Each structure stands twice: as C-alpha cells, then as structure tokens.
Length: 204
Image (cartoon, rainbow, N blue to C red; front, side, top):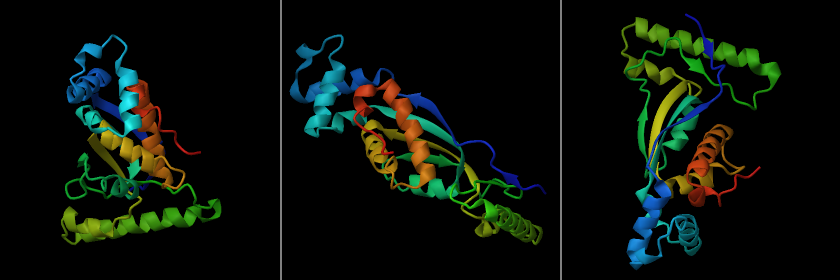
C-alpha cells in the first residue's frame, strides 16, 4: 500500500451558475417596488449595489452557484458543511475505500517534524487496513481515519448565502484551507457577478 501526500493544490471549479444572474436579481428586486419602468440595459449593477447598501439582500437569493472542490482535507469540509443554507454532495468514506488515502499536510507544520507527520499517516493507513482485513466494513473502519484525508465536495448556494460565507471565511481569522477555497470561489463569482460580490474584500 502506498501513502499518498496530496501534492496537488486545492482545486475549485465552477460547475453551474444562474444564467445572467444580475438581471435575474434586478427583475426580482424591482418586483418589490413595481419599478420595472426603470430597467435599462445597464441598470442592474447600480440597482443591486443599492439593494446591498440598504441591507435588502433577499433578491440575491434568486441567483445560485455550484462549485466542485477537490484536493481538500476533511478538516476543511467539516467547516464548510456547517453553513446551513447550502446543498452538499461529498465523497463518502462509507462507500469509498480509503486504504490508500491521500492527505493534506498543514501549512504550519515545521519542516523538522514532517517525517513524523508522514509516519503517523502511514500508521493510520495500516490501522485502517488492519480493521478492513478483520472484516470491518468501510463505514466502521473509517472511524480511525484522520481529518487530514483528502476529500471532494460539491456545494450549491444562493448568492446571499455565498456573501455570508465569504464574509466569514475569507477573513484572516479563518482557517487557512477554507480561506483559500472561499477566496477562490469569491474571485470566480466576482468576475461573473461583480455587483453582487465586489464589496467583499478578503482580509490580508
């Protein structure tokens, strides 16, 4: 059995987004005021920024985005799935055999302790295989697996919820891995729907 350090960087991919999301949001928002006569070719961005400034963000719930995140640890996904207004599909340790699991090494790990960390991962791999060989199902053998195990997850949320997530998780106080993932997702959405996200500035 070969232990696999995750040597690829965390990967974020946009799978789907509401077509023309800012115009959808403008249509929804103007319904509240019956101000359709004010819709112009380029009115949507100023209108959305005004909604956000007023704190009237419910129209942003009419646009959604779905991302796939790869090469991340389960320590990171455990944080991400705590956001309630999000749909999640994640690689299952109940059905996927983890006897050759890859793992993420914490950025803060001092170089002089790297060998110890890798040895610990090899030991856990041996423990997992031992219990599989003794007849435990994957769903029970997984109890010995570390949060460092890599995972793959697909997450969907509306724009209002993404704003909430990004405000929390791009903070300098957020854990480094989820911060990197959320900064990548924020960058993608800011390119697609700037008026909805360009007021969120990640902390350095």
